[in-house]
Length: 138
Image (cartoon, rainbow, N blue to C red; front, side, top):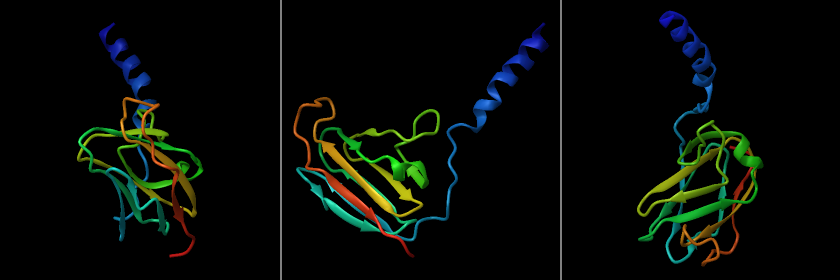
């Protein structure tokens, strides 16, 4: 009976072992940083596929980023701090004070987002819509 239970557990857990893993490309050659303080700087950023885009929270309280265009988030070369339990990408991400999240886009496109300066107050102060333009070519 114990052996059968063990085999059943393995059979149930084995398919889940592939979840949550993303392919990792080579270490990005360029890191482009977006700083979040009293404002988002820069609010327009240009990058190439494969470059790392890093959002840093310089505030004393957590902030929340809401990604408006999810198409680019379907094909990432790298990610830090945005993955769901099942390996997808969150469209709302909280960044604790002094921490960062990052993404490496595998293809060209536009990612628009907003930053809520108080992660616990969705009706509170919010940045104007910012954008990351990932341009084709290397």
